[in-house]
Image 1: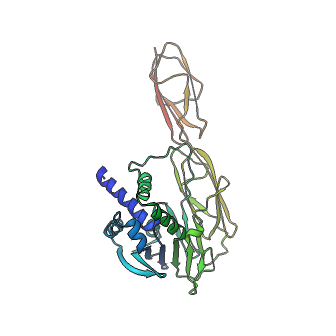
Image 2: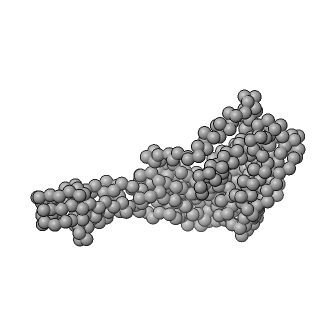
Image 3: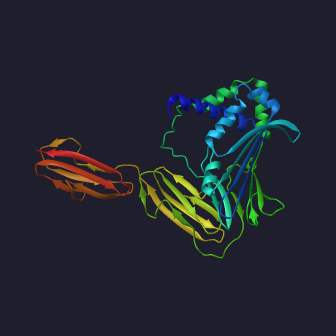
Length: 361
């Protein structure tokens, strides 16, 4: 994507964010899930007409918002109408589409924050992917300066309107309703009269995991993990998925509650994950992320020596997996005295590799 197009898209995203997220009087999402995990998605965003006229009109046009969502989801039906919502004349955006499975629903709901959706005959969960902050990883600067543009957009309106925006945000209603093919026996939402539809107050629950329980088996099968193996070592970030026959009661990463069955861990560390389901079945996973190359002493890359060298190597992270000198395995502390050119290749268990070439004359 060229810079100009990317810039225009980013500006539109900022404008849409201001229009349909911050300035919204209400945002309602209704999902219908069938037994085969396909279903329909409907989102309604209502913005009071006076707020639209005071803060949004002139900055964002209806057609811009419609074009953005139509480009994002070509198969969706996107419309706008003027309606009376709870006694307030409002501009209402309607967004409807079908999904073929929970993976597609997960993609639809993952706006801004990656989501994890699980739907089985036993339970349903929705949560943010657990991504802890990595202090060693520098925050990427946005080339488009979205945060700055957003602040400028808000500051472009008068103080009275800004206060109105703040008030609307405070009072804004955000809800997610999901209709299931099964009766709900337990949930942290509100079950409607049909016994199969649950409504969650998204503002009240914040980032808390949403769940609905349909049934619990007597299975003694412990949760399992995908994305890493016990005792493994990795030199890149690791995406972990916790699979469970029954609803998970808790997931902990190094003793801290993760609140999700999907995790992305990227900082250098030793990680221990503990997952427990509602039957008390527990599974643990321990692995290391090591991004540091092994250390070599006794010779340096590109150097020439007139005396014998004692080669030492080590790795404080995952440990040395192999060391080759001119293609032959050696141990740390090996003495090299014969004249010639040498290539030393040391790799740790995570796959970090350090290669040096030196000479003895």
